[in-house]
Image (tube, rainbow over all chains, first blue to last red; front, top):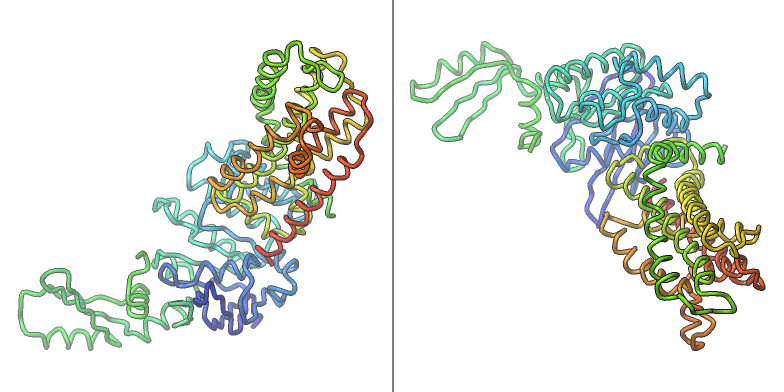
Length: 286
Length: 247
Protein backbone atom coordinates (compact mmCIF):
# COMPACT_ATOMS: atom_id res chain seq x y z
CA UNK A 1 0.00 0.00 0.00
CA UNK A 2 1.44 3.38 -1.00
CA UNK A 3 1.50 6.09 1.66
CA UNK A 4 0.30 9.60 0.76
CA UNK A 5 0.87 11.26 4.15
CA UNK A 6 3.39 10.01 6.65
CA UNK A 7 4.59 11.65 9.84
CA UNK A 8 7.14 10.35 12.32
CA UNK A 9 7.40 11.72 15.86
CA UNK A 10 6.02 15.02 14.60
CA UNK A 11 5.97 17.74 17.25
CA UNK A 12 5.34 21.46 17.30
CA UNK A 13 5.90 23.71 20.29
CA UNK A 14 4.77 27.27 20.83
CA UNK A 15 6.30 28.98 23.86
CA UNK A 16 7.28 25.68 25.43
CA UNK A 17 3.79 24.21 25.01
CA UNK A 18 3.48 21.16 22.78
CA UNK A 19 0.59 21.70 20.38
CA UNK A 20 1.44 18.60 18.34
CA UNK A 21 3.11 15.89 20.37
CA UNK A 22 5.00 12.97 18.84
CA UNK A 23 2.39 12.42 16.14
CA UNK A 24 2.76 9.32 13.97
CA UNK A 25 0.34 9.27 11.08
CA UNK A 26 -0.04 7.30 7.88
CA UNK A 27 -2.66 8.01 5.23
CA UNK A 28 -2.87 5.63 2.28
CA UNK A 29 -3.23 6.56 -1.38
CA UNK A 30 -6.86 7.05 -2.46
CA UNK A 31 -8.09 6.84 1.11
CA UNK A 32 -10.54 9.28 2.69
CA UNK A 33 -9.08 9.94 6.12
CA UNK A 34 -10.88 11.84 8.86
CA UNK A 35 -8.78 13.79 11.34
CA UNK A 36 -10.93 14.54 14.37
CA UNK A 37 -10.27 16.32 17.61
CA UNK A 38 -11.69 18.95 19.93
CA UNK A 39 -10.82 22.61 19.41
CA UNK A 40 -7.19 23.21 20.28
CA UNK A 41 -6.28 19.53 19.84
CA UNK A 42 -3.62 20.32 17.23
CA UNK A 43 -5.55 19.67 13.98
CA UNK A 44 -4.92 23.04 12.39
CA UNK A 45 -1.26 23.08 13.38
CA UNK A 46 -0.85 19.61 11.88
CA UNK A 47 -2.48 20.81 8.66
CA UNK A 48 -0.20 23.86 8.59
CA UNK A 49 2.80 21.54 8.88
CA UNK A 50 1.46 19.20 6.16
CA UNK A 51 0.92 22.17 3.84
CA UNK A 52 4.41 23.65 4.47
CA UNK A 53 3.08 26.77 6.19
CA UNK A 54 4.65 25.85 9.53
CA UNK A 55 7.97 24.22 10.29
CA UNK A 56 7.78 21.36 12.83
CA UNK A 57 9.83 21.69 16.01
CA UNK A 58 10.91 18.05 15.62
CA UNK A 59 9.97 14.93 13.72
CA UNK A 60 9.46 14.47 10.00
CA UNK A 61 6.67 14.61 7.48
CA UNK A 62 6.39 13.26 3.95
CA UNK A 63 3.74 13.99 1.36
CA UNK A 64 3.66 11.40 -1.42
CA UNK A 65 7.26 10.58 -0.57
CA UNK A 66 8.55 14.17 -0.56
CA UNK A 67 10.03 15.57 2.64
CA UNK A 68 7.78 18.34 3.95
CA UNK A 69 10.69 20.59 4.95
CA UNK A 70 13.56 19.72 2.65
CA UNK A 71 11.39 19.35 -0.46
CA UNK A 72 8.70 21.89 0.36
CA UNK A 73 8.55 23.16 -3.25
CA UNK A 74 7.71 19.65 -4.52
CA UNK A 75 5.23 19.06 -1.71
CA UNK A 76 3.35 22.22 -2.73
CA UNK A 77 2.51 20.63 -6.08
CA UNK A 78 1.14 17.47 -4.48
CA UNK A 79 -1.78 18.84 -2.49
CA UNK A 80 -4.75 21.12 -2.82
CA UNK A 81 -6.41 22.59 0.25
CA UNK A 82 -9.81 23.92 1.17
CA UNK A 83 -9.31 25.96 4.30
CA UNK A 84 -11.88 26.33 7.03
CA UNK A 85 -12.12 30.09 6.58
CA UNK A 86 -13.03 31.74 3.32
CA UNK A 87 -9.69 32.37 1.63
CA UNK A 88 -10.82 33.62 -1.76
CA UNK A 89 -10.00 37.04 -3.14
CA UNK A 90 -13.40 38.69 -2.78
CA UNK A 91 -12.59 41.45 -5.25
CA UNK A 92 -12.04 38.95 -8.06
CA UNK A 93 -14.60 36.92 -9.96
CA UNK A 94 -15.03 33.16 -9.62
CA UNK A 95 -13.05 32.57 -12.83
CA UNK A 96 -10.31 35.05 -11.86
CA UNK A 97 -9.81 33.31 -8.51
CA UNK A 98 -9.35 30.00 -10.29
CA UNK A 99 -7.16 31.63 -12.93
CA UNK A 100 -4.83 33.07 -10.28
CA UNK A 101 -4.37 29.67 -8.68
CA UNK A 102 -3.82 28.02 -12.07
CA UNK A 103 -1.14 30.60 -12.88
CA UNK A 104 0.58 30.00 -9.53
CA UNK A 105 0.67 26.30 -10.40
CA UNK A 106 2.17 27.08 -13.81
CA UNK A 107 -0.66 25.91 -16.05
CA UNK A 108 -0.40 27.23 -19.60
CA UNK A 109 -2.99 29.62 -21.04
CA UNK A 110 -5.04 27.05 -23.00
CA UNK A 111 -4.79 24.48 -20.21
CA UNK A 112 -5.94 27.08 -17.69
CA UNK A 113 -9.02 27.93 -19.72
CA UNK A 114 -9.96 24.28 -20.29
CA UNK A 115 -9.32 23.23 -16.71
CA UNK A 116 -11.30 26.15 -15.27
CA UNK A 117 -14.26 25.34 -17.56
CA UNK A 118 -14.04 21.67 -16.57
CA UNK A 119 -13.97 22.45 -12.85
CA UNK A 120 -16.75 25.02 -13.03
CA UNK A 121 -18.89 22.27 -14.55
CA UNK A 122 -17.66 19.81 -11.90
CA UNK A 123 -18.88 22.03 -9.06
CA UNK A 124 -21.95 23.33 -10.94
CA UNK A 125 -20.78 26.93 -11.11
CA UNK A 126 -20.41 27.50 -14.85
CA UNK A 127 -23.25 30.01 -14.81
CA UNK A 128 -21.51 32.04 -12.11
CA UNK A 129 -18.00 32.21 -13.56
CA UNK A 130 -18.01 35.99 -13.99
CA UNK A 131 -19.70 36.78 -10.68
CA UNK A 132 -17.59 38.51 -8.05
CA UNK A 133 -17.01 36.31 -5.00
CA UNK A 134 -18.87 38.74 -2.78
CA UNK A 135 -22.01 38.27 -4.91
CA UNK A 136 -22.37 34.49 -4.52
CA UNK A 137 -23.69 32.40 -1.61
CA UNK A 138 -21.62 30.72 1.10
CA UNK A 139 -22.16 27.28 -0.41
CA UNK A 140 -21.03 28.50 -3.82
CA UNK A 141 -17.92 30.07 -2.28
CA UNK A 142 -17.09 26.74 -0.70
CA UNK A 143 -17.49 25.03 -4.08
CA UNK A 144 -15.19 27.64 -5.66
CA UNK A 145 -12.62 26.79 -3.00
CA UNK A 146 -12.92 23.09 -3.84
CA UNK A 147 -12.53 23.84 -7.55
CA UNK A 148 -9.52 26.02 -6.80
CA UNK A 149 -7.93 23.27 -4.70
CA UNK A 150 -8.31 20.84 -7.62
CA UNK A 151 -7.05 23.14 -10.37
CA UNK A 152 -3.57 21.60 -10.59
CA UNK A 153 -4.87 18.01 -10.31
CA UNK A 154 -3.36 17.34 -6.87
CA UNK A 155 -3.03 13.77 -5.66
CA UNK A 156 -4.00 14.84 -2.15
CA UNK A 157 -6.90 17.05 -1.17
CA UNK A 158 -6.87 18.51 2.34
CA UNK A 159 -10.26 19.69 3.55
CA UNK A 160 -10.34 21.66 6.80
CA UNK A 161 -13.97 21.79 7.94
CA UNK A 162 -15.29 21.87 4.36
CA UNK A 163 -18.96 22.19 5.27
CA UNK A 164 -18.84 24.39 8.34
CA UNK A 165 -21.70 26.88 8.42
CA UNK A 166 -23.50 25.40 5.41
CA UNK A 167 -27.10 24.21 5.23
CA UNK A 168 -27.92 20.49 5.03
CA UNK A 169 -28.60 20.53 1.28
CA UNK A 170 -25.31 22.24 0.44
CA UNK A 171 -23.46 19.96 2.81
CA UNK A 172 -24.84 16.86 1.04
CA UNK A 173 -23.88 18.37 -2.31
CA UNK A 174 -20.32 18.89 -1.11
CA UNK A 175 -20.21 15.35 0.26
CA UNK A 176 -21.11 14.13 -3.24
CA UNK A 177 -18.27 16.16 -4.72
CA UNK A 178 -15.81 14.77 -2.14
CA UNK A 179 -16.94 11.20 -2.87
CA UNK A 180 -16.58 11.82 -6.60
CA UNK A 181 -13.06 13.21 -6.18
CA UNK A 182 -12.08 10.23 -4.05
CA UNK A 183 -13.48 7.78 -6.59
CA UNK A 184 -11.49 9.64 -9.25
CA UNK A 185 -8.33 8.65 -7.35
CA UNK A 186 -7.68 11.63 -5.08
CA UNK A 187 -6.63 10.99 -1.50
CA UNK A 188 -8.78 13.02 0.88
CA UNK A 189 -7.61 14.25 4.29
CA UNK A 190 -10.56 15.75 6.13
CA UNK A 191 -11.08 17.52 9.42
CA UNK A 192 -14.60 18.13 10.61
CA UNK A 193 -16.64 18.93 13.67
CA UNK A 194 -19.59 17.10 12.14
CA UNK A 195 -19.16 13.51 13.29
CA UNK A 196 -21.81 12.27 10.87
CA UNK A 197 -19.70 13.79 8.09
CA UNK A 198 -16.72 11.70 9.11
CA UNK A 199 -18.90 8.61 9.35
CA UNK A 200 -20.44 9.25 5.95
CA UNK A 201 -17.18 9.95 4.11
CA UNK A 202 -14.17 8.43 5.82
CA UNK A 203 -12.54 5.04 5.34
CA UNK A 204 -10.54 5.61 8.52
CA UNK A 205 -10.46 8.26 11.20
CA UNK A 206 -7.75 9.36 13.59
CA UNK A 207 -8.68 11.12 16.82
CA UNK A 208 -6.19 13.65 18.13
CA UNK A 209 -6.33 15.01 21.66
CA UNK A 210 -3.86 17.41 23.27
CA UNK A 211 -1.57 16.99 20.29
CA UNK A 212 -1.41 13.19 20.45
CA UNK A 213 -3.14 10.58 18.31
CA UNK A 214 -5.28 8.66 20.75
CA UNK A 215 -7.24 6.41 18.40
CA UNK A 216 -7.03 5.25 14.81
CA UNK A 217 -9.14 2.94 12.69
CA UNK A 218 -12.26 2.64 10.55
CA UNK A 219 -15.43 4.10 12.09
CA UNK A 220 -16.71 0.53 12.59
CA UNK A 221 -13.45 -0.62 14.22
CA UNK A 222 -13.53 2.30 16.64
CA UNK A 223 -17.17 1.63 17.46
CA UNK A 224 -16.45 -2.08 17.97
CA UNK A 225 -13.62 -1.20 20.33
CA UNK A 226 -16.00 0.88 22.42
CA UNK A 227 -19.07 -1.33 22.01
CA UNK A 228 -21.63 -1.40 19.21
CA UNK A 229 -24.60 -0.88 21.51
CA UNK A 230 -25.12 1.85 24.05
CA UNK A 231 -27.60 2.35 26.87
CA UNK A 232 -28.32 5.91 27.94
CA UNK A 233 -29.80 6.41 31.42
CA UNK A 234 -31.14 9.94 31.56
CA UNK A 235 -31.51 10.90 35.17
CA UNK A 236 -33.08 14.00 36.58
CA UNK A 237 -31.26 17.19 35.66
CA UNK A 238 -28.59 17.05 32.96
CA UNK A 239 -26.87 13.93 34.16
CA UNK A 240 -26.86 11.09 31.59
CA UNK A 241 -24.97 7.84 32.06
CA UNK A 242 -23.71 5.96 29.00
CA UNK A 243 -22.90 2.25 29.11
CA UNK A 244 -21.41 0.44 26.12
CA UNK A 245 -21.91 -3.23 25.16
CA UNK A 246 -20.41 -5.41 22.48
CA UNK A 247 -23.85 -6.33 21.10
CA UNK A 248 -27.51 -5.47 21.40
CA UNK A 249 -28.25 -8.68 23.38
CA UNK A 250 -25.90 -7.70 26.22
CA UNK A 251 -27.38 -4.21 26.25
CA UNK A 252 -30.92 -5.64 26.43
CA UNK A 253 -29.95 -7.91 29.34
CA UNK A 254 -28.52 -4.91 31.17
CA UNK A 255 -31.68 -2.86 30.62
CA UNK A 256 -33.85 -5.71 31.89
CA UNK A 257 -31.70 -6.01 35.00
CA UNK A 258 -32.31 -2.38 35.95
CA UNK A 259 -34.85 -1.72 38.72
CA UNK A 260 -37.94 0.13 37.51
CA UNK A 261 -37.56 3.86 38.14
CA UNK A 262 -38.43 7.24 36.70
CA UNK A 263 -35.21 7.28 34.70
CA UNK A 264 -35.55 7.53 30.95
CA UNK A 265 -33.62 4.69 29.31
CA UNK A 266 -32.61 4.68 25.66
CA UNK A 267 -30.93 1.79 23.91
CA UNK A 268 -29.34 2.46 20.52
CA UNK A 269 -26.39 1.68 18.28
CA UNK A 270 -23.20 3.50 19.20
CA UNK A 271 -21.77 6.02 16.78
CA UNK A 272 -18.51 7.80 16.14
CA UNK A 273 -19.56 10.66 18.38
CA UNK A 274 -19.77 8.23 21.31
CA UNK A 275 -16.24 7.10 20.54
CA UNK A 276 -15.08 10.67 20.29
CA UNK A 277 -16.67 11.81 23.54
CA UNK A 278 -15.48 8.78 25.46
CA UNK A 279 -11.93 9.33 24.25
CA UNK A 280 -11.66 13.09 24.52
CA UNK A 281 -14.03 13.67 27.38
CA UNK A 282 -15.97 16.41 25.68
CA UNK A 283 -18.00 17.08 22.58
CA UNK A 284 -16.34 17.99 19.30
CA UNK A 285 -18.12 21.27 18.88
CA UNK A 286 -17.06 22.71 22.22
CA UNK B 1 10.06 31.46 -13.93
CA UNK B 2 10.60 33.93 -11.08
CA UNK B 3 9.37 36.85 -13.20
CA UNK B 4 6.42 34.84 -14.53
CA UNK B 5 5.41 33.90 -10.97
CA UNK B 6 5.80 37.48 -9.78
CA UNK B 7 3.58 38.61 -12.66
CA UNK B 8 0.98 35.98 -11.70
CA UNK B 9 0.82 37.49 -8.21
CA UNK B 10 0.69 40.99 -9.67
CA UNK B 11 -1.96 39.98 -12.21
CA UNK B 12 -4.63 39.45 -9.55
CA UNK B 13 -4.03 42.90 -8.07
CA UNK B 14 -4.00 44.43 -11.56
CA UNK B 15 -7.44 42.92 -12.22
CA UNK B 16 -8.77 44.59 -9.08
CA UNK B 17 -7.11 47.90 -9.99
CA UNK B 18 -8.47 47.77 -13.54
CA UNK B 19 -11.98 47.28 -12.18
CA UNK B 20 -11.61 50.30 -9.90
CA UNK B 21 -9.42 52.55 -12.03
CA UNK B 22 -11.77 55.54 -12.29
CA UNK B 23 -12.44 55.58 -8.56
CA UNK B 24 -8.75 55.07 -7.84
CA UNK B 25 -7.70 58.02 -9.99
CA UNK B 26 -10.17 60.34 -8.33
CA UNK B 27 -9.29 59.33 -4.77
CA UNK B 28 -5.55 59.30 -5.39
CA UNK B 29 -5.59 62.90 -6.67
CA UNK B 30 -7.52 64.42 -3.78
CA UNK B 31 -4.73 64.54 -1.25
CA UNK B 32 -1.93 65.93 -3.49
CA UNK B 33 -4.26 68.51 -5.00
CA UNK B 34 -5.24 69.69 -1.52
CA UNK B 35 -1.57 70.01 -0.61
CA UNK B 36 -0.98 71.92 -3.84
CA UNK B 37 -3.80 74.34 -3.16
CA UNK B 38 -2.97 74.83 0.53
CA UNK B 39 0.81 75.05 0.31
CA UNK B 40 1.42 76.02 -3.33
CA UNK B 41 -1.26 78.60 -3.90
CA UNK B 42 -2.26 79.44 -0.34
CA UNK B 43 0.87 79.76 1.82
CA UNK B 44 3.44 79.92 -0.96
CA UNK B 45 2.14 82.79 -3.05
CA UNK B 46 4.93 85.30 -3.66
CA UNK B 47 7.63 83.19 -1.93
CA UNK B 48 10.68 81.88 -3.77
CA UNK B 49 12.92 79.01 -2.65
CA UNK B 50 16.26 77.89 -4.15
CA UNK B 51 15.76 80.23 -7.12
CA UNK B 52 12.31 78.97 -8.05
CA UNK B 53 8.81 80.07 -7.14
CA UNK B 54 7.48 78.19 -4.12
CA UNK B 55 4.83 76.67 -6.38
CA UNK B 56 7.49 75.18 -8.68
CA UNK B 57 9.49 74.14 -5.62
CA UNK B 58 6.67 72.32 -3.90
CA UNK B 59 5.29 70.34 -6.88
CA UNK B 60 8.18 67.78 -7.02
CA UNK B 61 7.89 67.38 -3.25
CA UNK B 62 4.21 66.58 -3.55
CA UNK B 63 4.99 64.10 -6.33
CA UNK B 64 7.48 62.38 -3.99
CA UNK B 65 4.82 62.39 -1.28
CA UNK B 66 2.21 60.95 -3.66
CA UNK B 67 4.64 58.25 -4.80
CA UNK B 68 5.39 57.38 -1.17
CA UNK B 69 1.79 57.15 -0.03
CA UNK B 70 0.46 55.32 -3.10
CA UNK B 71 3.33 52.83 -3.24
CA UNK B 72 3.27 52.12 0.48
CA UNK B 73 -0.49 51.75 0.69
CA UNK B 74 -0.82 50.09 -2.72
CA UNK B 75 1.52 47.29 -1.64
CA UNK B 76 1.22 47.32 2.15
CA UNK B 77 -2.48 47.84 2.69
CA UNK B 78 -3.39 45.32 0.00
CA UNK B 79 -1.06 42.70 1.43
CA UNK B 80 -2.32 43.40 4.94
CA UNK B 81 -5.91 42.88 3.73
CA UNK B 82 -4.90 39.70 1.84
CA UNK B 83 -3.12 38.34 4.92
CA UNK B 84 -5.44 39.27 7.73
CA UNK B 85 -8.85 39.91 6.18
CA UNK B 86 -9.19 37.79 3.02
CA UNK B 87 -6.65 35.30 4.41
CA UNK B 88 -5.74 34.58 0.80
CA UNK B 89 -2.00 35.17 1.25
CA UNK B 90 -1.62 31.68 2.73
CA UNK B 91 -2.84 30.34 -0.62
CA UNK B 92 0.13 32.05 -2.28
CA UNK B 93 2.50 30.69 0.38
CA UNK B 94 1.21 27.17 -0.28
CA UNK B 95 1.69 27.49 -4.05
CA UNK B 96 4.93 26.39 -5.71
CA UNK B 97 6.19 29.95 -6.00
CA UNK B 98 9.51 31.19 -4.59
CA UNK B 99 9.45 33.74 -1.73
CA UNK B 100 11.30 36.15 -4.02
CA UNK B 101 8.54 35.96 -6.65
CA UNK B 102 5.97 36.45 -3.94
CA UNK B 103 7.67 39.56 -2.62
CA UNK B 104 8.22 41.01 -6.08
CA UNK B 105 4.63 40.36 -7.11
CA UNK B 106 3.21 41.91 -3.96
CA UNK B 107 5.55 44.94 -4.16
CA UNK B 108 4.93 45.55 -7.86
CA UNK B 109 1.31 46.52 -7.36
CA UNK B 110 2.60 49.25 -5.05
CA UNK B 111 5.01 50.43 -7.74
CA UNK B 112 2.25 50.41 -10.37
CA UNK B 113 -0.14 52.33 -8.12
CA UNK B 114 2.63 54.77 -7.15
CA UNK B 115 3.51 55.45 -10.77
CA UNK B 116 -0.13 55.88 -11.82
CA UNK B 117 -0.87 58.30 -8.96
CA UNK B 118 2.30 60.28 -9.59
CA UNK B 119 1.63 60.41 -13.34
CA UNK B 120 -1.92 61.62 -12.75
CA UNK B 121 -0.70 64.39 -10.46
CA UNK B 122 2.16 65.25 -12.82
CA UNK B 123 -0.29 65.79 -15.66
CA UNK B 124 -2.21 68.24 -13.50
CA UNK B 125 1.03 69.88 -12.33
CA UNK B 126 2.33 70.26 -15.90
CA UNK B 127 -0.86 72.05 -16.86
CA UNK B 128 -0.43 74.45 -13.95
CA UNK B 129 3.37 74.83 -13.87
CA UNK B 130 4.83 74.59 -17.38
CA UNK B 131 8.35 75.29 -16.02
CA UNK B 132 8.31 71.85 -14.49
CA UNK B 133 10.34 69.34 -16.56
CA UNK B 134 10.25 65.56 -16.68
CA UNK B 135 13.53 64.02 -17.82
CA UNK B 136 14.93 60.47 -17.56
CA UNK B 137 16.57 61.25 -14.20
CA UNK B 138 13.21 62.40 -12.86
CA UNK B 139 11.60 59.14 -14.02
CA UNK B 140 14.40 57.01 -12.56
CA UNK B 141 14.11 58.85 -9.23
CA UNK B 142 10.35 58.33 -9.25
CA UNK B 143 10.69 54.63 -10.05
CA UNK B 144 13.28 54.02 -7.31
CA UNK B 145 11.10 55.97 -4.85
CA UNK B 146 8.10 53.79 -5.69
CA UNK B 147 10.20 50.63 -5.35
CA UNK B 148 11.57 51.63 -1.95
CA UNK B 149 8.19 52.56 -0.47
CA UNK B 150 6.40 49.58 -2.01
CA UNK B 151 8.86 47.25 -0.29
CA UNK B 152 8.50 49.25 2.93
CA UNK B 153 4.75 48.64 2.62
CA UNK B 154 5.28 44.91 2.10
CA UNK B 155 7.64 44.81 5.10
CA UNK B 156 5.12 46.63 7.31
CA UNK B 157 2.31 44.31 6.15
CA UNK B 158 4.38 41.19 6.83
CA UNK B 159 5.21 42.43 10.32
CA UNK B 160 1.69 43.65 11.14
CA UNK B 161 -0.38 41.44 13.41
CA UNK B 162 -3.56 43.49 12.93
CA UNK B 163 -5.05 46.22 10.76
CA UNK B 164 -4.36 48.65 13.61
CA UNK B 165 -0.65 47.89 13.32
CA UNK B 166 -0.68 49.24 9.76
CA UNK B 167 -2.46 52.40 10.89
CA UNK B 168 0.05 52.80 13.73
CA UNK B 169 2.93 52.40 11.27
CA UNK B 170 1.38 55.11 9.10
CA UNK B 171 1.00 57.48 12.05
CA UNK B 172 4.47 56.89 13.46
CA UNK B 173 6.53 56.65 10.27
CA UNK B 174 4.72 58.00 7.21
CA UNK B 175 2.96 61.01 8.73
CA UNK B 176 6.11 62.56 10.23
CA UNK B 177 7.92 61.84 6.96
CA UNK B 178 5.16 63.64 5.05
CA UNK B 179 5.94 66.94 6.72
CA UNK B 180 9.65 66.50 7.52
CA UNK B 181 10.86 64.79 4.35
CA UNK B 182 11.81 67.94 2.43
CA UNK B 183 8.42 68.03 0.76
CA UNK B 184 7.33 71.52 1.71
CA UNK B 185 10.60 73.19 2.67
CA UNK B 186 14.26 73.09 1.75
CA UNK B 187 16.25 70.84 4.07
CA UNK B 188 19.49 72.57 3.02
CA UNK B 189 18.56 75.65 5.04
CA UNK B 190 18.26 73.76 8.34
CA UNK B 191 20.91 73.44 11.10
CA UNK B 192 23.35 70.56 10.53
CA UNK B 193 22.02 68.30 13.32
CA UNK B 194 18.45 68.57 12.09
CA UNK B 195 19.57 68.21 8.49
CA UNK B 196 21.40 64.99 9.44
CA UNK B 197 18.24 63.63 11.09
CA UNK B 198 16.01 64.47 8.14
CA UNK B 199 18.41 62.89 5.65
CA UNK B 200 17.85 59.64 7.53
CA UNK B 201 14.35 59.66 5.99
CA UNK B 202 13.98 58.15 2.51
CA UNK B 203 11.40 60.74 1.48
CA UNK B 204 13.94 63.54 1.96
CA UNK B 205 16.16 61.95 -0.67
CA UNK B 206 13.21 61.36 -3.00
CA UNK B 207 12.12 64.99 -2.73
CA UNK B 208 15.70 66.16 -3.29
CA UNK B 209 16.17 64.00 -6.41
CA UNK B 210 12.80 64.78 -7.97
CA UNK B 211 13.15 68.51 -7.27
CA UNK B 212 16.65 68.69 -8.74
CA UNK B 213 15.53 66.85 -11.88
CA UNK B 214 12.33 68.87 -12.26
CA UNK B 215 14.00 72.26 -11.77
CA UNK B 216 17.15 71.45 -13.81
CA UNK B 217 19.43 71.76 -10.78
CA UNK B 218 22.64 69.72 -10.30
CA UNK B 219 21.48 66.13 -9.72
CA UNK B 220 22.17 64.70 -6.21
CA UNK B 221 23.44 61.24 -7.14
CA UNK B 222 24.20 60.46 -3.50
CA UNK B 223 20.49 60.89 -2.71
CA UNK B 224 19.52 58.49 -5.54
CA UNK B 225 22.02 56.03 -4.08
CA UNK B 226 20.48 56.56 -0.64
CA UNK B 227 16.96 55.74 -1.90
CA UNK B 228 18.40 52.65 -3.60
CA UNK B 229 20.02 51.66 -0.30
CA UNK B 230 16.73 52.12 1.55
CA UNK B 231 15.08 49.88 -1.06
CA UNK B 232 17.78 47.25 -0.53
CA UNK B 233 17.33 47.34 3.27
CA UNK B 234 13.53 47.00 2.97
CA UNK B 235 13.91 44.21 0.41
CA UNK B 236 16.31 42.23 2.64
CA UNK B 237 13.98 42.88 5.61
CA UNK B 238 11.02 41.47 3.65
CA UNK B 239 13.03 38.37 2.73
CA UNK B 240 14.07 37.76 6.32
CA UNK B 241 10.55 38.18 7.69
CA UNK B 242 9.04 35.94 5.00
CA UNK B 243 11.71 33.30 5.53
CA UNK B 244 11.09 33.36 9.27
CA UNK B 245 7.36 32.99 8.71
CA UNK B 246 7.46 30.06 6.28
CA UNK B 247 9.41 27.01 5.21
